Image 1 (cartoon, rainbow, N blue to C red):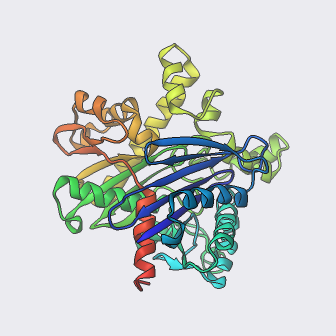
Image 2 (image 1 turned 90 degrees about the vertical axis):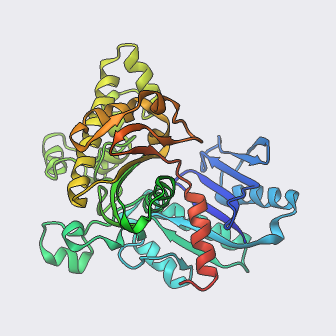
Length: 394
């Protein structure tokens, strides 16, 4: 079944046409800088890449390019469903679901929990429904995989009324990626997923780790919003809950301003004062920039602590999985992280680590507990989940 996968960000639209059974992808693309005069869409088809400007910079305009490409390939009429990545579904969804007006309202109600993501997801759904009004549309939630967490993992130590009336709890994110790489790691290790205890580390501009036991998430580092947990590209990760009050009183900053800074001006960017790109930071650190070096060191320090914490949740650890843009491409981050985790039994294979680049992956340790690089494929996971729903699985 040909499935069109749509993944909308606050200023981007990633798409791919996939065969959910084989993974064949004749068309994919990324529209960036939507909402600006510099918007464009990069289209990959077979062995060709083209870039198309988007003068209006809108989601419908980007979808227009997508439709034109589908027509050019003669595949538009073969699309059977559209699958959407939706970041936050609260505690209402533990599986992907067919999009109905009621589902749209739940996604809208979760906007305060994911203010940068859910509005974009809704914009993508609206544009896709306009482009494909007769096709089933499916929402695949980043939070759904983590709905298997027990209360001891998802409850905060706050007044119970906050939980029962306002849904204040830990939800977790990147679930589509964590679920995919956990399954792929089991396959590569030749193990039954039901008997595996894994820590999966999704490291990109957004970062999280998860404890996956028997194919189910039992804990993760992100919480109520995608701000909790690890140091990220522009997000702070964990800070003292008293920080906003302190800055409001001492610096005269507003709560919205503080929140925006924690989302967009912190993390690797805030620490280094340079960039949120790990590749650029590693190069700057090699050239002696101390702020860049500190940013990388803090990223690794916090990551290693989180991985060790997830290992204690599991009780025993069968493997560690690195994925995401940083996890797949930064041999430096992987090596530095494993160097801090010797007590868990990791022994780095430097040659294997250096060779584990995007598109290849593989085991990067020799003996002891294996650590491996698995290239995530959220689009394929969404296509599979969408096909499952359309076939009557939900």
